[in-house]
Length: 302
Image 1 (cartoon, one colour):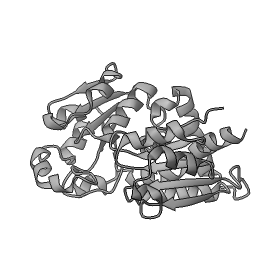
Image 2 (tube, helix red, strand yellow):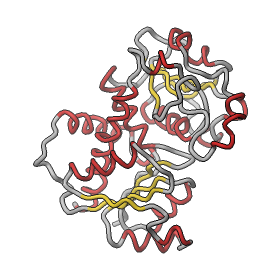
Image 3 (spheres, one colour):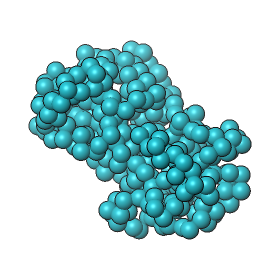
Image 4 (cartoon, helix red, strand yellow):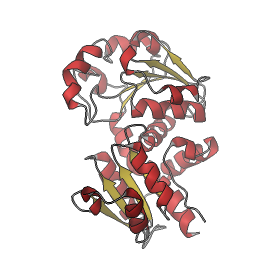
């Protein structure tokens, strides 16, 4: 039987995402140390890009579910010496029960999935960040209930986080208002698959009007540091500040996947203010991914 992968949110149905969110909430609220559905299981974690939240959440999640996790960087494997991805996928997947990759190129993850005999999880690529969206949606459900019919405003770069919000909007049926500089719009192919749920606005204030959730990301992601000055100019009018939050509903939440640059994409009074749920959002990476690991690795051994 072919393994089940999680490369994009679209690898789950709408019903499965909602069930996974509820499972994550249940795991969070009942931390039973005797519950070890992944006892004896091993997750290989391949990191081409460094991380705080992704590594800690996956490693801790595997341990809490009774399994183990291996941290692998290009320095630790033949991947760093040019071994074909196909060969690495075949070899690594013959020895572990699941593989998580946090990498630069989306093709790396899809190639691993094609040749792996165990589930492959996208921990982040330049195209998508679906694990973060599971945590974001869990956080919204905990704070406000189901997000269906609500309005989310994405302000800033049309990057991997924006792409995954577009996917989430279609699957969970919420409205996504996007405000990006013209040269930093999301990929048309991803937008075109979700046109019924996505609208574009010329200004952040217009996108934020009547929103239930405001979310953003850094202006220059990892690997784009050489573009920092150029991006500062392009995004200077796309900061989430108090007037932007005031344009949203009075009880609107603010999210950011972290790390954040206070004074750039968001002001300190917003990210550290009462509407911000960024630290609950960060913690929920652990719980959402535990539910995902239970789903994928338990399916494998059932």
